[in-house]
Amino acid sequence: MHDTSSLVPAANAVNREVVLDGDAAIKWFSALGWIAEPLSPRLQIVADLIRTDTFAIGRIWHTPVQLTSAFSDQAHGGMFHAVYGIEGTQMMRSKGGLAELSPGQMYVQLFGDALVITAREPVAVLFFVSQWGQLRDRDGQAPSPRAGLFGASNAYREVFTTAIHSALNSLTTVEGTGFSRFRTGIHDIFASVLADDAPMRPERALRLGMSRSRGHEVETSRPTSLLRRASQHIEAHASEVSFDVSKLSRELGVSPASLYRAYENSNLTPASQLRRIRARRARLALDELEVSGDVDTVNLKRIARASGFGSVSTMRRALERVPELVVDSSVEVVRNEAGPASSPPIPPLTSGRVSQRATPD
Image (cartoon, rainbow, N blue to C red; front, side, top):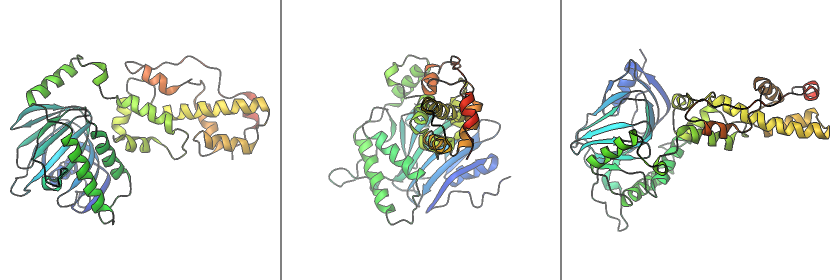
């Protein structure tokens, strides 16, 4: 049993990298106003949360569960919650009907209206809670409340979700002098999302979800897969020494567990792909040094750092662990999303000349 006294989400606080399971996870949901009924042997959550009395943004990954709202409109007059799907699908059941929330879609619901969220697979979501009166249209007036499922084609949704991810990844605090302006900005961006879209009718939303699950949705409307996004992000940031899998999961807005699950059908993991890309870059640079005959300790340190390694010894170990060079790991992963990735054999990464002269720092 966890001691949750310091882990339940308090108002006017920031809770980052919350990792809970079992009864502690159920209690955490309860503190947010939800009755949690696990649909798997053990409920697990990984969450980041910024919360005040009437405002909250969060990012959460959790295992299968059914969540039932446990708050009343009288206790939270004029408030709403918005759930944005990152990974996995959930069924949203309210008085308006049944709708399927898929990645890239958002569901808006007023407090006091009964809502049941059922996730039969691990999911990752962003959520936003606030008062409807805080939203403003171009005349400075609060727009009429709108609820339901919003589609994925919206010019401002990516701006809104990026802002939430950035706030949860940064050193944002509710006590900071800029928090009130940040809060106003989030409200304005969210109001832009609502103004640029209209909620789908529940029955239409459900039909779309069923078509998607049967593979009838056109390719161009599918959200980019987590595997593809992770692979592209690794390729773009592999040269940064401080970049690792933890940072990758934070920047993509998913839990490490979700990230590794995305690689299940590949012969790589996020960590091994990162190591291969760095080894490839180091090998290419070392080959150039061999040609010039200028392989010394200073140059080896420079290559190690430029390739994303913290030291020459770390680079050497990576080269030894990757005996065959993958020409382009990101391309191989994306190309083989439907099955195991395979790479043609390439000559060994370590040649006799480099291994003799490459002394660790």
